[in-house]
Image 1 (spheres, rainbow, N blue to C red):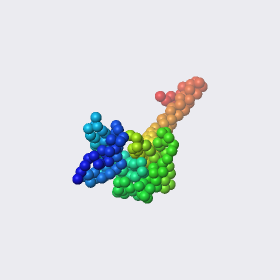
Image 2: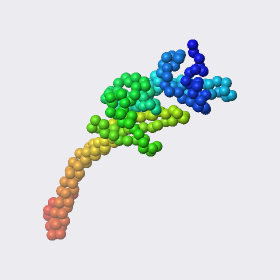
Image 3: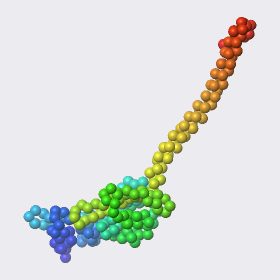
Image 4: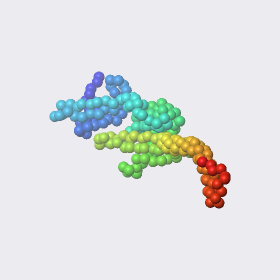
Length: 219
């Protein structure tokens, strides 16, 4: 039989008002894994709760806009994976099951997040070399209520950040090369024409200086 007062979300709200968040557990109605956010009603008449299934959290991450080779993971305070998403299969994670300890996943990238310790509030970003390539890692610890802790980590290769800069630099170089290829020949032709005109003008000036008016004066 289902007795709400015996569920973890009910007792948690009674023991830790005004808001409590359960550890992941199996919902009685759907048999799905999830969390419940609960709060006691006024005058102790009951408890109100809202469920968040881990599958819904997974779908939420899957709809998050990420770069092609980045990844995002949500961990609980026990370093278990609540949800993970990446469009890339290069990190050796695959379809990891919810509540899998991050230490049991053979991924050096997830190991960086799993071993993230200390540093204080300012230590939210790091550049770490993994497999001979530099990656940008970001990490945030979220404590919504006393006793509840969630960690959100994400990572992506440095080239996904430097790539647009390099592409913009290359476009500038291409434009400059095209400009030079167009302007330099015109400048050479123009310089030759000006040189010939100056040489002719110098010759005409020399004849005029010598009172030689029989030569052909060029326009």
